[in-house]
Amino acid sequence: MSLDAVAPLPPGLGLGWRPEAEQQHAQALARLERPLVLVSDTVRLPRELCLRHWMELEFQGEVPQCAGAAVTHAAQAHAWVVEGLDTTRQSIDLSMTFSWLAGRALDGTSPAEYDAGATISGVCLAAHTTGMVTEQQFPSIKDQRQWNARQLAVLNPSSLGQYSTMCIRGQAPVQSADHAEVVMGTGQGFIVFGVMWNEGWASVGDKPIESIPGGRSYGGHALALLGYTRTHSGTLYLTIANSHGPRWGQGGYQRIRADLWWQIMQTSPFGARVLSVTDEFFIRPFRGWKGVQG
Image (tube, rainbow, N blue to C red; front, side, top):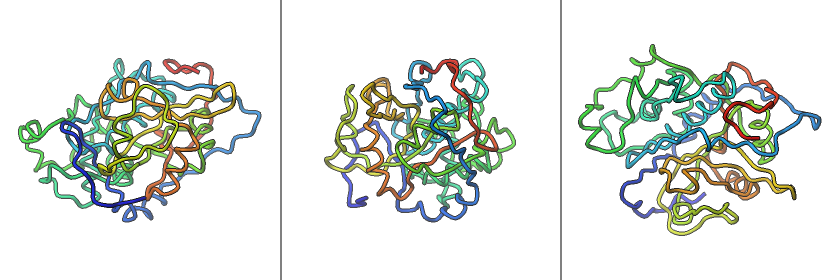
């Protein structure tokens, strides 16, 4: 993955993934890994999982909090599968800003820095140790005016840990594109990953991604996988959940051909990890999970 000099991002949008710093948390993250369940060919997987019809994605605005958005999106999605919790009715709409700031604290970033991103691994670790809080407890910010009004320079994320709504309890590396389908299709968890964002990624339309996006680089960006589709011909597409608002893709979601996604992951300093809100990974047979098409 190239970490060359980057071009400025179009106004109003933030990125914020720090790929060059991921290795500082590698050992700590590895200690929190849980074994994924091995799945035989006899386990039924739904041909399609789609969350975009019920889960509205957070828009990060200009704040570089994509890692916080990606981790909370994955956690909310898995909570739905595990407990049937509706993010609007059961108040588990998690604060991406809190998770981003808690991750930055583990990264060693000063709370006073407004325009600083976070490692995905730092946010994952913070979501495990500090936990995550709801938007009601800690409303997310979208621009510098809100930041200044909240006086976030004095925030101590650990002080809010006692109000944690849920935690990331299980984590494990994704081993292949087909593996991503299996862990999502059996309800074991949803996935976070990072890419180097560029003109191609930024200009994705409403058609599935059929080639690796290219063009001028804007910097690192964290995303989530919240579903997949396997066509009748057998081609696998994975469903990306972004935090750049509903104008990106289809309401903030877009499909990418799975082999292309895995090719990108092979050069990522973070890779892709399954996140679970339960202590252990286990199979939840798909019987039409509420709110999830399949």
